Each structure stands twice: as structure tokens, then as C-alpha cells.
Length: 427
Length: 104
Image (cartoon, rainbow over all chains, first blue to last red):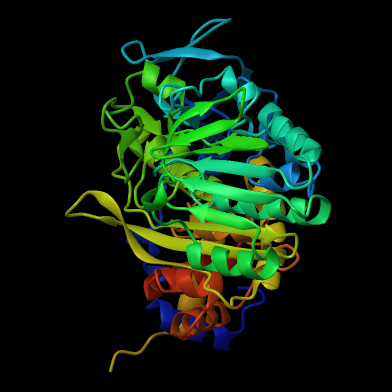
């Protein structure tokens, strides 16, 4: 009780209805016995997987945790639009697993997983012995539907980058932007929902416009959208008007924003009635759950993974949990923040289930910032609860920045968030 | 009228950390806190413009959340979030972050 006065205690006790004291019978106090024999394997070391591995340890001092990730260094997608526009060094997007492994006793296996053996309960690796599990958490992120847009396949992405995963693709787009002639048009194509980071394409358009306004002021950004509305639309469009007047044009699906095919070599986009030629063409392709989820039979006809939102356990494969962009957690968006929140709920549920306890209904939060420029940002946030009748997540509250919001303050918050979030996930 | 014996209750509370040490597993943070730490950091420590939420008196925490919820107009991130979280959860969060220590 040090540092808490009697008065404060009384006030809080009155407010809580003595919840703390009733803790032994309360729903929040969980003392699932540490499980020295249980083996939990986490497949994929992105925001979801890394967070899950860390929190398994925070919640259980003894459980055996293995994290399988093919890369030694993780490249963050949040911040990558800044890197493309030259506002952030690409190196600053790099995060490694050293502290995670050292601080939380996680067994890191740097290897390529090639399949999940649901019957034997083991993850098969391209090189090395398979890794057995009692429960498996899969966080495979996204893959692209290379068959969705005629003319646009993986080979074409070397000329026409998607840059929707950080790393090489980001560098390609950055290089092309720097080489563009003053007056050249940058075209960004945006798929239908759902896809990774709903406001991301519009943040990208904003930051590319910022780069162009400084370096190629006669250039323009054209967004061809397969949707008729987008995340934070009012605030984005207000910001574009103020910061980059006449520079960004958004063409909705209703106005032929939907694309038919691509000619990569000529950087031409065909729509139903016309075509657009770009100096730089950035195609963000339609997406699906990471390849491994598909291989293991964790995806449904939509290409994403259906889960029970109480535990994020796959409805198709008992004992296997799917978190992050790959899972269907509607109405939560596919974001790093959402993956982090889901991972913590999932880690708790996995330990509960190993101990034979029913997981509790979650309260999940999402919050995402988008930069309009170096000192301008807007946000979207939501709180999500569990609907017993529908057995799905439901939005308890949601909202986004409106025109006239404090964009400078939100830009400071966006930068502070990046630092805190990376520590929360990787340290 | 039923009267609470405050000193006795305080004794029980202050003994709680000792008892916790003997329990087989660490107490799990309240489930609503999993969202808070996504912005405010693993132990609610805050950084630059994002404020620290740990180590605050519980009553202050509660008041702040209720003020966020009551605010009208464009309330920013916390207004949206406060409206989706109920009083019982506020209290759990106030208690948890009030006593939260650095997790690393």
C-alpha cells in the first residue's frame, strides 16, 4: 500500500466495489498452474507472433516456447511509407529477436517452415528436424493473390512494385520515385477490402505527394481504388486539400477506379473504359493469408483463416490458433496494433486451454495513425468485445479523426507510438 | 447498516503481494489492458507525447477515463476508446496500472 493514502484507497475501493478484495472469486484473477511440460510453438515472428511468444512467458514462467521465423531481422511495415518518401531511414525499420530471446527464455528457430502436420502436431522445416507442439500459434501475415490482376505477377513486381511488405520492394519504389521526371504521374492502385493496413494506401499517397511537392512539384498522384470509400476519408481529403492542393486525385470504384489489367513494361493500367499511363506505378494487389496457413488447411474460401475470437483457435484445426493479418477478426482491421492485441488475448487463452480453463471474453482495442506529412497525422480507433449470440467480435465504439482535428499533436503521438510499440513487441 | 472494517481490509490488501509470491503463476493483467499497452508501452510507461499511465492514484485514473468518456465533439483517440470500455474495466485498469511495475 506504499504511496497510496487512506483517502485514495477509500476512493478507489468505493469505485471498484472492492473488486480487488473479491479477487479470489473474481473473473480476472487467473492462476493457471505453470506448465513445465507444455510446448507452445509460435510460427512467424511479426508483430503478432513476437508479441505472443513474449506474453506466453509473461503469463507462465515455465511453459516451453519456440518461435519459428525465417528471417534474422524483422522489417516493420509501419514506418515504411515514411521510408519510401525519404522521411525515415530504412535502417530504422529493422528489429531483431535478441532481446526477446534473452529476456523471455524463448527458443528461436531461424528456419523456413514448409508445412504443419496437424495429425502429428508438428511444424515441418525445410532444413532440420520438425518441431512438435501441444498448441500452435500461427502468425503468417499476408501473401498476394498473384492470379487476381491480369498482367501482374511476382515477376512484374520488379518493374511495378507493390511495396506492401517492407524491404526490397520498398527500395524499388523509393528508387523509382527519385528518378521520376518533374510532371510525371504516380499511380497507386488499391484493392477491395480486406487487406493489410486499410488506411495505408492513402498515407502512402500523402507522403509521396509530400516528396513530390518538395522535389518534383509539377508531378501528381492518382489513386485508382476498387472501393467506393476508405478509412479516415474525410480527414485525408481535407488534409490533401490543405497540404497538397490539386496534387492527389482519388478515383473511386464507381468512377472507374477498379482496374482490369496491367501492362507492367509500359506501366499502363487498363480500366473498364480507359487506360492510364504512369511514370511510377505502384500496384497494391489483392491479398490472402500467408501461404503456410493455406498449405495447412487453415483458410476458408475467402483465403483468410476463420477463428473463434475467444481464443483465436482455428475453427478448421483444433489446437492451432491464428492471429494477426491472416485471421478473420472482423470488424477489427488488419493492423500491427490489432495483431499485438490479439496475440496477448491468444497467449492467455492458449495457457488457459492447456490448464483446462475456459478463456474469458476479450476486450480488444485497435488504434492506427496515418501521416499526411512529416508534422500532420490522423488516427482511427476502435474497441471490440465478444458477442455471445453471434460468437463474433463486435465494435463497442469506433471513430476516426475528423477534418479540423489536431494533426500536429497526432503526428507527435504517431512518432511516440512507433517507439513504444516496437519496445512492447520486441524488447 | 453494514460497516466495513477498513484497517482489516487494508491489512488483507497489503498482504496480497506476499501471498502472490507463493501462488503458482503470476497474476494475469486485466484483459482490457492489452489494448492500453499497445500505445502506452508494456508497463504503461509512456514516451514523449504519449503519457505514462502507470503508478497513478486509482481515483485519478478513473476520473480521467470518465472525463474522456463524457467529452463531446472531436475527442481524439482516448475519447473513442473510453466510450468502449465500462466502469468495471476502468476500475480493473486503474488498479492494475496503479501498481504496475516495469515488466522489463
